[in-house]
Length: 88
Image (cartoon, rainbow, N blue to C red; front, side, top):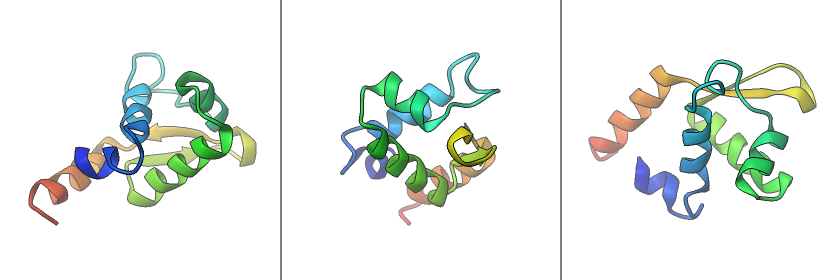
């Protein structure tokens, strides 16, 4: 899974997942604005990465519109990782 997330994204998606696992962040999640600021990427790029990670399953958004907070879905993240480790 690391390769899939690292390729074509220059590690940005892995960085997002890592930021969302940090103490204090894991419980409340981060908004797209938070991610953009912490990673130093444009907001549209952060939103694109967050949408992709949400579609893949490792992230779960909560809230409304501009105030969506993204959190890691640890169960789904483990399932997706296992699929890629098996050569999916």
